[in-house]
Figure 1 (tube, rainbow, N blue to C red):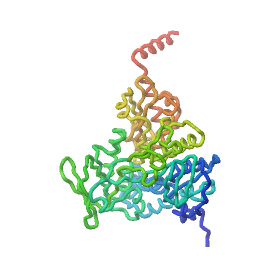
Figure 2: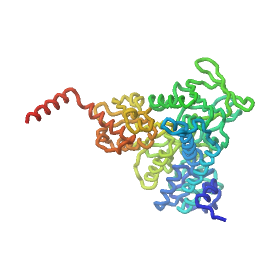
Figure 3: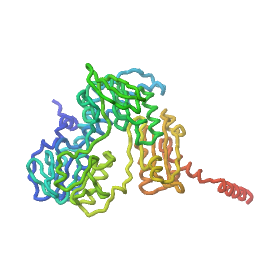
Figure 4: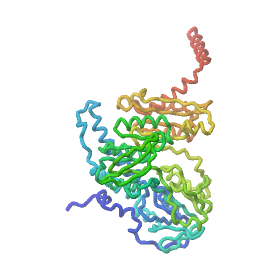
Length: 504
């Protein structure tokens, strides 16, 4: 019998790898430097960092370690998107001179099995074994604060000098009559499917809805995307949303905007949605419904009142140092932030480590946090959009580089995108940027660094990028800014200088 590899053993171990109930309950310390409630991204980063710095740390989790990102979010969704991209590339191969079956079917069950293998492989980083090896005391169960400096879990009381609430968020339930009775999917349940729905309705045209609508469509489902606002991605750059709308429609996703869903009911083996569109009643029958209308913070039964921690329906109230109204207790991640991204939770946890354990003064407002929507093309954003700058009364200029002017994009056949940068009205300091491109998430880091360190757009013209790459679009923007400085007066002066030099 051949011994299984470490990777195979790891796959077999999920979800045991990240189930805190699998370990023996530790004996509580007399007092902890840091108690962390929630083992998602923010909680894991804080617990590991504090333990590495010599702190006595307790980590409390009622379900699975890794939180939304590992179990229901980034890892499974991007694995599915990767499979869907492979199907799409195969279908368009003929455009690149490659003979391929344009209608080759996708194997949804195999794609989902691959996703689960990847999730299992990556689960070791968030595992019970790893954190136990770091010296973190892991407690399984629902945590509830019993006072301003104590928290109870499974009948045990833990006392702390500092605590971090990192309980994350869950998929919000749309208040649509009949939806719960008919049944629906969320990001927490869709990755349990092994059979592709023939017809899928996606409620919500935000990042999650757009990503999964495109992926499931590419894998062979008939997809209708329903959005209550006049356009999809209502919080993103309008031009970027328009480009993605065109891309989704070209691939066969039916997009219905300004749709007011009135009710849902089970109808045989399917589900019937009734909605209003331009005042007229419409009906749609599908096999499954995916709700992607946002996320709600996990606040239920945490004993926040006993701890003196203020909160609203939007989450826990924190100041710029991520302190709650109880100065002993901090919060980080989705439970307290409108930026519900894994990398934002990671960055916030690092702020908590400095401020909670070392009397630091790190501020949330000092962070420059980019984000990316992993559709095809991707949409990446950092800083202000034009609408946000206008609302704040900030003067700005906008420069745009279309990808049809970037050689690599033309070569790849992916030239329907752009890089847009907003700079100050009287200088070249960047206020914000939007990228629509196949690799926008990889490109946005350079602009994030520039905004973070107040590097002007002229600097981009000085940076040398390999040719041909999509990064050339950034250099071209720097060149465009430099050309914009050549006013008629400057041009006349330069012409006079050149004439003088010819006469020497």
